[in-house]
Image 1: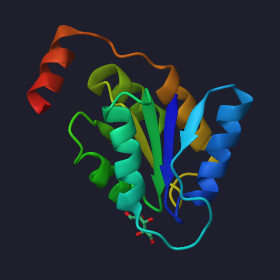
Image 2 (image 1 turned 90 degrees about the vertical axis):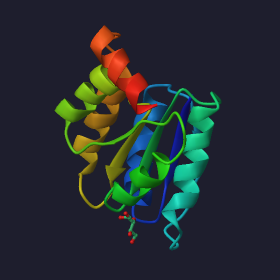
Image 3 (image 1 turned 30 degrees about the vertical axis):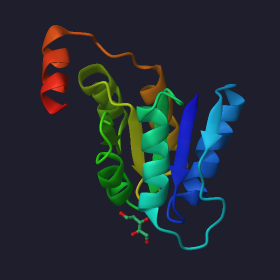
Length: 141
Ligand code: RB5
């Protein structure tokens, strides 16, 4: 189950992400927002971060205008490793090395084609389970 959250700056791109998830029969829970009215991104960051940290959802996807504010907010929640990605290399590496559990993107930064590839990479790349990466993650916690 994938937790989704966005603000007005990410709403349009989130529609593309939802289309990708539905096409691939990937279950999701949408924590909003639900239209382009101006909202506060920390509300959605916290909802998604808690859903992932509490085990209700396996991973999360957060989108605001830049991806910056929403990722900063999500990373305040214990157990969350939210990675802001603008390319597929980073999406792959953050799963392999950081075991990132939330992907953040900027709706005003990446186009829909690239964003869907980033999501696909993030969701389909396993953690490496390498001892050095486990050690470094435990040092963060
Ligand atoms: C909203 O205008 C914008 O500030 C927000 O979407 C995000 O980019 C914040 O980091």
